[in-house]
Image (cartoon, rainbow, N blue to C red; front, top):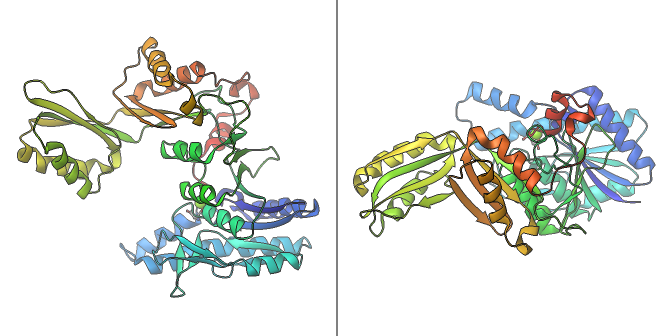
Length: 425
Ligand code: ASP
Ligand code: MG
């Protein structure tokens, strides 16, 4: 018998039929002798729709009111799920964030959980009921409703799991786990049995978002084991936990991200304090820089490049145009057709030569590397966007991640593969 927290994402509760399906799944877990607590997201695209309604009456809705409104989405799904369970003869009780004891700070729209009171959930469990908790929301010290940021139901689930000391926090979605890479890009991608918290965090930060990063950070801090699995099949998914695998691969996964751009400032005078001026100005205008490259100087001038989200382009342009005359640089250009390909794996720490192997692989395939950055368990390379797919494939093979069976051979349709990898929950 286990104590399980089971979180269901928006797609899994998108219709009354699906809610009944979730209820059947919870009932089966209960019948198997487990104690189970459900956490739910809002139905389908409800949160977006509520946001749209708010914007239709107020272009800049106050954060407190917005939270009040958004929190209603999860309150609908939690109640419907409890009703569905009751209809099947399983006693259930729904709880809002406040009732479930999720206490947060007062930062509306992206509140942090400061405390979890577990009494009501434990009471319900010992009375033989299935508690159903509204994800994404909490209560601040003033008694105002807060929300935890988009995708925040994952964080609620982890917090509840920690609060009641559950054996596992199961996160059900339309994705059946974490893959070595995107199967739409590399048909030989494999589902991973286990990833460590750090690997999961690195993978999400470079474009492979299966779980909300905040939730993974909390899980790591609190030692909560996450099991990311499909709401639509019985198959085991991927465990996210501290322990690494028995047989350690050098690389666990490869992610790619086309959402960044590269800006190069030409002919910057090579004098003290120039870089500081440029990057202070960019920082002050909230341009989120990722990689920075300064070339060796020729004749006392140098080129400085950096990458940042393409969405920051207007802010970046404005900032650079303002500082160009100040620092005496010649011009700048923007390259939006880039992709960042990242290798992630804790195995990297103990294996020398990973970068050399990656560079060699790309070199042999005539793929030019424009920029490089690393962390202890990640190697990221910026290349031309048109080469991204090929780069992922050749690296996947070079680092021995290919599975024997090809995705196409499993007779999944393109849509099914897309659904597996669908990032929006
Ligand atoms: N309903 C919220 C959202 O769409 C929270 C969640 O789904 O986790 O972001
Ligand atoms: Mg959602």
